[in-house]
Length: 267
Ligand SMILES: C[S@@+](CC[C@H](N)C(=O)[O-])C[C@H]1O[C@@H](n2cnc3c(N)ncnc32)[C@H](O)[C@@H]1O
Image 1 (cartoon, rainbow, N blue to C red):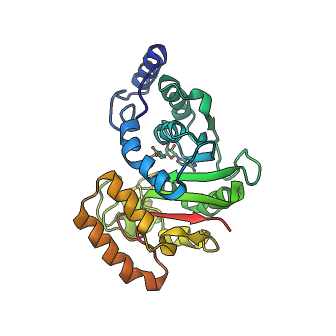
Image 2 (image 1 turned 60 degrees about the vertical axis):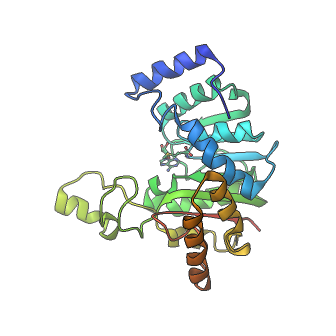
Image 3 (image 1 turned 30 degrees about the horizontal axis):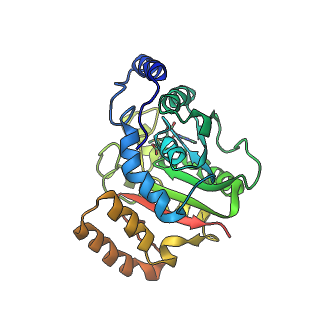
């Protein structure tokens, strides 16, 4: 597992996290690398196998926990995020874990235009990020992700809160996914709309001409990754049954939960 190896960078990370109003050891801040090691590592290994020297883009990298895990697995990682402070803290996180040389972390204010050439990456990771992209930007963002992915490359979407879920995953609010955003302003006087899940139909549509690996192998890699993450056999058995039921409609395992996931290969 990636360890904190650099005391000076660790101190700088802690100072900055505190200045940003966070507990540096919080599970979702400095404590997220062990979580990503237990989850993202298995996801990447199940779908991509050996990622040594693979060019991997983490889209919406936050504090770079998943990027640090991928770099520890041997990938050459690029991470992008729309939040400049987040990227500064992510750089410190990578430095304290001793992998700064393997991760290029960039602040990109508008990710509808990514600063990379066509076909730059073998693997793109989108973990818990597409639901944060403004809905009117989602198609353009996914178009960019498709542009920078190499032919034969993988896009791994995981942990994405679903607009179909009765309870919105991040806020825990019931039924908010089912009313339009305009109601937030008209009924509740909110300037910024409430958090909602991403629409899985929009994402399925965007990757419609890609090979859905979860359909191709009937969810075997998805199940292997979750088993390695420690999910219970009962939950996995239930997922297998649901996958059989939804397959005739072109839906793969992982598309129906409160958070959805799928992995595609570019033709
Ligand atoms: C929950 S965090 C992602 C966690 C991270 N991928 C991981 O595995 O640990 C969501 C991130 O998405 C970023 N984000 C929001 N909108 C974005 C956009 N349009 N393009 C790229 N990143 C975005 C946020 O700044 C935030 O850092």
